[in-house]
Length: 282
Image (cartoon, rainbow, N blue to C red):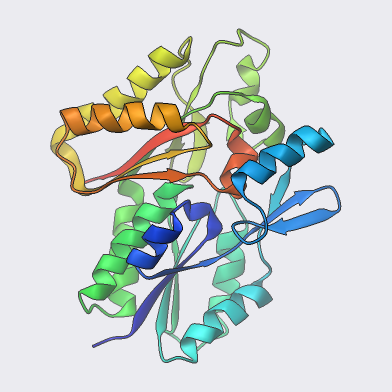
């Protein structure tokens, strides 16, 4: 049997329990407040992130690991006899893909495969969990990576943003500046398209926004891959319970997981953000 291990970065927003269940290893990215730097999931939590925002009055910035750190991260698994399939946050959103790819080139051909998830948050996690399932089936690293790349464009991502300040100042989402000064009740829905974030609908109020979020997955009901559906949020527990109840009532889902967005994603989307992420069959 092929020894294949799945790795990803801390933007995957999978809980520790899910990482353990699917045998996925994580490399943390950096979260920075001025001169102070933290490692996502290691020495800073999402709760602590927002405490620091209040305390310091500034928004955090994020940074990837350099290729040398990725190299050492991969090497520990190569030394144990594994081939690595690394699932990265979208190459259009972060330098993480480039740095991990550069590191992969230092190994013998076929030892490390880097997959661009074309997604963020638990969209990255979905691709990683699928890759884990393929690895458990005994596929080679090359076959796992190929299948993961086939799945990546089918990941559906939609988040309701509760506050626009983080996205606007982060500059990673096209179109957000067009209505930043308009009605504060607008709760934009952010989608991923071709690996980049873009503003979708601009509903007034949370109730309408959550309704649109649910309607998106309902429209895909017949095309839904039922194995995994994610409800991921930045400390919006009450709405997560509501969305999960609605999804269970209206859809046949094998594994419906709730996860909390880590510091990397929360740094760019802000408190209260919540999304539904899933994979379509085609």
